[in-house]
Length: 123
Image 1 (cartoon, one colour):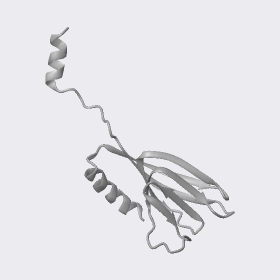
Image 2 (image 1 turned 120 degrees about the horizontal axis):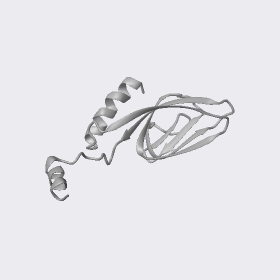
Image 3 (image 1 turned 60 degrees about the vertical axis):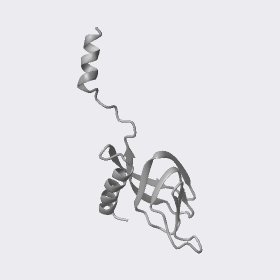
Image 4 (image 1 turned 30 degrees about the vertical axis):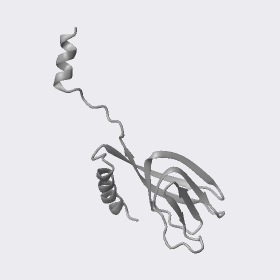
């Protein structure tokens, strides 16, 4: 998955979720040490793996899993959300890069003119 694809995909996905342009993007790069497991709580964030496609990597989340060594697997998930568990199954550290989309689910709407007017009249 390329970063160019992710950026186009995220824009479409956020529109489909009703978020529109009310989201932010972050870049995360992490090193997963030998036989280390990292757990990320990301219930409203979407992680997209863009680099680190190595056989010793296993990612599981509410969306599915990514594991090149899983027997019988015919589809790998590059999009992850919810509780994300990242495991390095070998002794060599691995470097991973993600683009993270963070929807702004409850943006504070600006009060409209009627609310401002009412507020001034009550004082």
